[in-house]
Length: 229
Image (tube, rainbow, N blue to C red; front, side):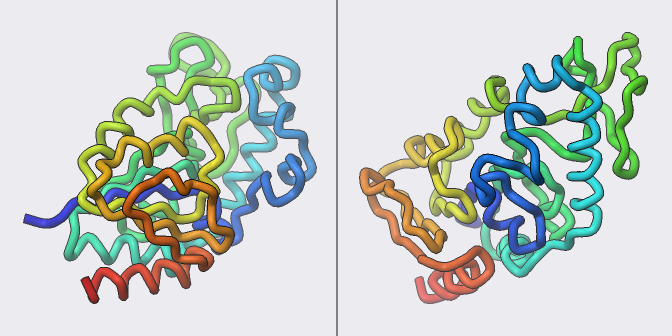
């Protein structure tokens, strides 16, 4: 029986594929205030701006390719039962070949009804426009969990984390909640690896080993450690 490797990934793993993160630019995201393009209030004020912002994110996503960190995670499925819990909304894990990916914050290439969250549709290509509506006639919005919205899949993710034989964190600063709390659901006895060039302040976590590298270099080291152990 394969050991369960549960992985929490964040923006740092996609940054190496050229996908911008808002935290790298002082709270601005491609020149926009986060409050204007990634909150329910921003959507109510100016849905056209929000739609255009995510159209540009999709364009960027379509032009990005999985990097070595994504690829190593996919390769580890040969020897481990791997589940990835990601804060990222791109599809780079899937395109690298990972088969079990849980998206905490939604999916960039999906839209959903603005009145019925259960109505979800694929976005073909990159464009979602004003006037694109669901079967109930309401405007479609990005299927993204915005700041200030609940993370509906959090309970599922916490249960997955609690089953880990090995727990890996890569590309996230461990300051965005509730995702950062997932490590607290991992059993104390479970070995934990944190890949981050800036060692996060999570010294309360037991049985943790830090790999102070960016995602791709860190994943290569992590793979070596698994072989050694």
